[in-house]
Length: 320
Image 1 (cartoon, rainbow, N blue to C red):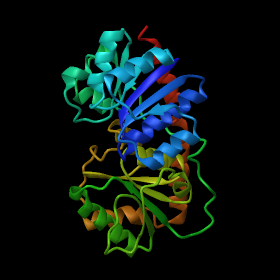
Image 2 (image 1 turned 30 degrees about the vertical axis):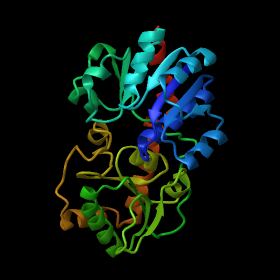
Image 3 (image 1 turned 60 degrees about the vertical axis):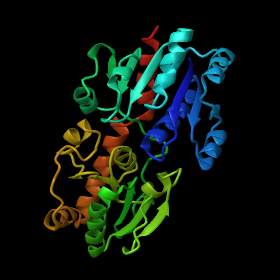
Image 4 (image 1 turned 120 degrees about the vertical axis):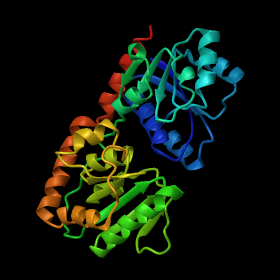
């Protein structure tokens, strides 16, 4: 199928999702064309290396010509900023539109429900936004499990990755977690935009490919896609966003998954005693390794990018 993918570039999991979708669509024999505004130069090189056709031009006249040239059959939009353009193209060229909703605060819903089909990334999203049942499908974010896989852990050193897009209202909680972990002799790497000056951790900034770091880590701290990628790479997940939901375990994984590991499930108070109790759970190397093995098995069985794209193709086909 020949699909036009529309989005705006963001330094977050949404862009990673779109890039992964395009790559796997090609792998499964389809022909996506990505149109993405505000694209970062380093990601442009990634698209070129993976032979994903793309453009950063987002005007209506150009897109109409592109659709005719590439014989586009369907439009898949991922951003609130590209949804109106997708709907205008649909109405003028009679091409169906699929819209993926990535955020609970997506507005306006009145525009979203005009799409031919809607993909919500969690049960929570479909329920809370009251998306129309007859045209909405829940498809969770997928991870390339051929890349995100664990390496043998030969050292007793405990290594953690903080993988997040930091905001000012989250920083205090993350600093508290990091400091207590450092007190427990964890080594911490921060990947993202968080570079705390007063904590003895390594800050790597934004990384296009986080798999090499996650494969060598024992614990990943963050939300959403960070937890999915970390678990698939054999890390124990620790959910911390606007709220603290704690470790992903066989007992907690299903309720945490329903809110896409967002930190909105349990909403624990972030007390020092709770954090110390959490770390004590991982003080036994045997318990840590058992949880890592659980994470890897669960991620491999439930977060497959291949399966996500198969489900997405089924949504595309339902538009005809």
